[in-house]
Amino acid sequence: MEVKLIIFLIIAYFMGSIPTGVVIGKKFKGIDIREHGSKNTGATNAYRVLGLQYGIIVLLSDALKGYLPVFLASLAGLVGWQLILVGLVTIVGHTLSIFLKFKGGKGVATSLGVFIYLVPNIVLILLVVFLLIAFSTKYVSLASVSAAGLFPILVLFMPVREGLGKWNMFGFALVIALFVIFKHRSNIQRLLHGNENKFGAKK
Image 1 (tube, one colour):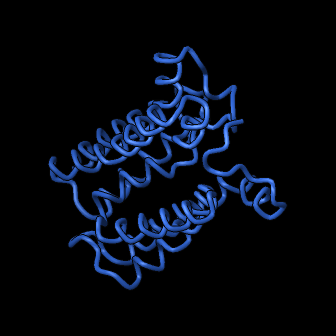
Image 2: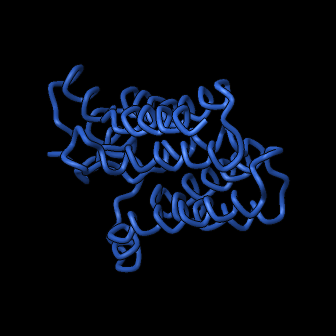
Image 3: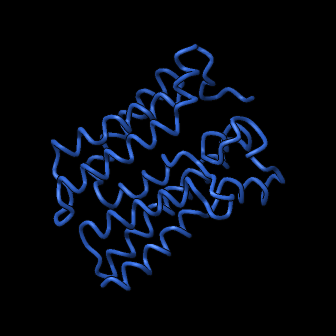
């Protein structure tokens, strides 16, 4: 089991490290999105720089690379904290990509993919919260931070997949929430100063 876990952790890291936003921007538009907009590699900046179609593709691709490692690990017999560890390493791969000199995105879409498999009931609520805030305020960053902060609270009060362990899942949710909020620290500062980019603004 230890060998199998190590193999899936390696797979998870490299799959998470695939810089989909950079690849798609260069392949279809000849643009390195790290040099435009917010210079982030995620879906929001991909939308801003490449357009809606490619922004959606990056979003779905980043979510898929979060979902697949835990899904495949589960099929291979990994359970509980092992799946949580695979999910965590996948997210780390996205934010500290070996293909981008250990830089990367903020981890929101990849985390979404991981949690769609682990706690789909909670993800549904978080998606509703995210969409309500994003479309009412036009601030994707505010929606992301709000959903991240709500995540560990929901884990405490809602059922999680059998075998994961509520406290294991809570610890994971708390770590990811704090990490996502930390990665959005510059956005939070801009929100406080009233100069954060709104969804739909092209800069």
